[in-house]
Image (tube, rainbow, N blue to C red; front, side, top):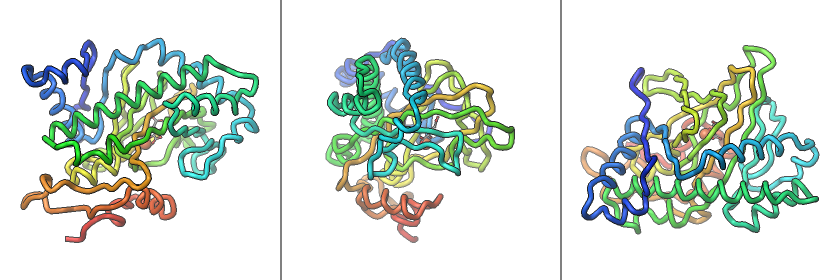
Amino acid sequence: MDGAKIPVLDFSGEDLDDMRKSSGSDQSWKLLCSKVREACESHGYFILLYDKIPTSLRGDMLVAMKALFDLPEETKSKYQNPKPYRSYQGKCPVVPLHESFGIEDATRLEVAQEFTQLMWPQGNPAFCEILNSMSSKMLDLNLTILEMIFESFGMEEKHYDALVNDSTGIFRVMKYKVPPREDENLGLVAHTDKNALTVLCQNDVQGLEVMTKEGHWEEVAVPRDAFVVIVGDALKAWSNGRLLAVKHRVVMKADKERYSFGLFSVPKEGAMIEVPRELVDNEHPLLYRPFKFADYFSYFVSNISDDALEIYAGVSV
Ligand SMILES: O=C(O)CCC(=O)C(=O)O
Ligand SMILES: [Fe+2]
């Protein structure tokens, strides 16, 4: 798909809940759902315009993140969690430009409060409010997009519970430093997201690149105030490989710091990822055996590999 246009979907001006409720009499919901699915099939990601998350909140979030990353290293390092991708990460030799926090369930007020308290023992209610509000809005959006995909496949809810209702949100905030030299500009190594679906947002510093089906890196020019939606391994496996978990990375070219934040919907401990029977036929033989998401994730963490999903859950044909 080299050179093929990056899909841009516009949900602005739409009340998705209303649209969905009137989907019996109105085709626009179904049409939107099929556009989402098509983008996830052809590219594994898309750019999303969505005005229900206010621009002012995005601006506040970026300002709040700067204050967070400006805290002393000693304070930031207090945020530790034994589970992977949920702690403070900085000074990693593989990606020295990258720093991040992964906060699970920031959508719960007490979690947002606890995190804020740890970073600002003297209190910072504004930060807490922004963190809680942004993560909640992005989780809603993430789960709605997932439901759109499942509806477009005509799936009954029981087939996708593990990816929507049994799902938790990890809110990740990221900072990328300006590279010291042009040849040391890797912000984040190439990877596929392991979770179901990711919704990302960034400041005006570009850097995200995706790998095309032909194996070339392509820059994603994210319009101001847009979101990027990325399919992860869990959704790829569930869809029997119909949806593409696109490989992506971050390359820093600008002389300004890049800030991004994302809401990762992650199947809960114990949730099983299983291809629904409806998605297996002669043309689409079963590609993945049923697996517990948490086991796959642990496998990945201890055997970091580009082909983790195929090796772990692939059915040899
Ligand atoms: O910073 C970005 O835009 C990408 C982040 C990302 O791909 C990730 O955290 O998985
Ligand atoms: Fe990613």
